[in-house]
Length: 191
Image 1 (cartoon, rainbow, N blue to C red):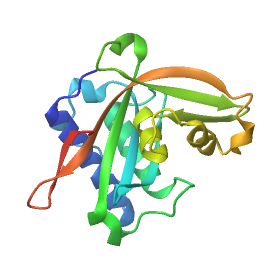
Image 2 (cartoon, rainbow, N blue to C red):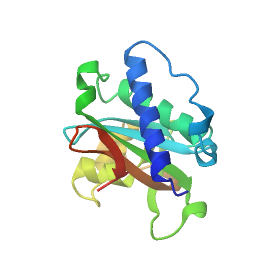
Image 3 (spheres, helix red, strand yellow):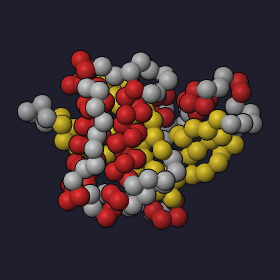
Image 4 (cartoon, rainbow, N blue to C red):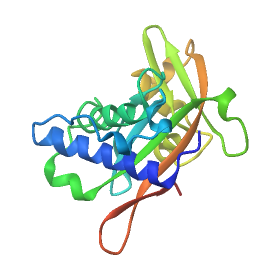
């Protein structure tokens, strides 16, 4: 599922708005119908990762395509900002220093090809975690060294990796905000 530049901008706006509204104690309403394209209405998994000074500050999402993409992004933004157990909740003072990144998940069968970057869902007992390949690179500094990251997201000690099953694989389309001279953020491709 190729997301257009306009759709990326809409998704980034919905994610930031959801975080701002949650900080102010409000809940986001339904976005205007004119903004939500057929692609954004399609059920899809999504993750939102939040970075502060290029360091991960929160990352959560929905692996299964249970809700429309626009809603998955909005909910994931709130979860990443306020419910990621690895981090304290985002504060209003941090908002200008944060960069959002969105990962849209599709089944590998529907998005196979050279532009498809694969992610993996791991499971042990009742715990499940998704490994987004670009997040592992950011966390570890090396693409091939991901065991510590995988076990960390599952809440396991690295020695407990035995018995972790690969549950599923998926394709990921990733885009993030980029700063422009005015200080405004614009959606762009991940570098």
